[in-house]
Image 1 (tube, helix red, strand yellow):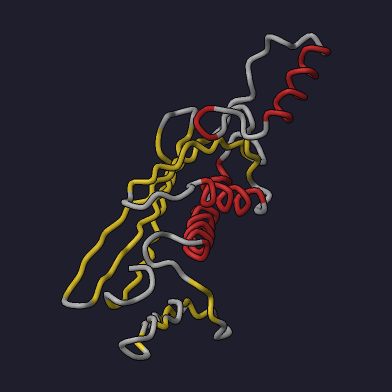
Image 2 (cartoon, rainbow, N blue to C red):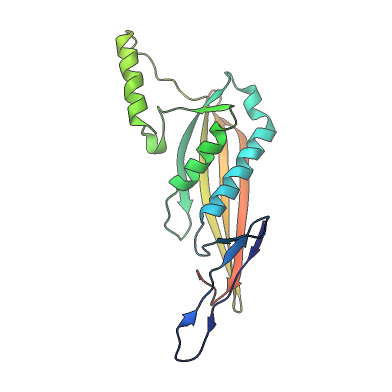
Length: 197
């Protein structure tokens, strides 16, 4: 994906600054609005798609104890200077994984240890109660997925650059060992008067 950054320009001393938003260019040349001071939806889409694709190509899920494998998605850590909702990335990852048909995401462990869908969990608990299995152990995941977003900022003269590093790790709950890791870096660059800086 080609990225271009548009600059703001002054129309005159008495006029307001006229700015054209910074944009991504998709493969067909269409402009997509981009935020330079924090990850945006295009960044989440790109990072999630590439890392899930890497996981699929690795073949790790072919060795799962059951098919489809059951996965718990843990909290995503935002270790950047920007405040944003990491649930956007979690949802992109979840959708991409479920669409492969090789993964089911368990509702017994969701974000922060809470059920992802409390109603689905309640229905399952009721079914277990009605069948006499109310005290059975929960359906624990075969794998857990953790993620972290890091940031690296640099500047030289009027040019500023920010890189967002998306990291994901897959752990086999039977052994406690990491079985796959992925990393995707999104770099954005522009001048000091660029929108978002």
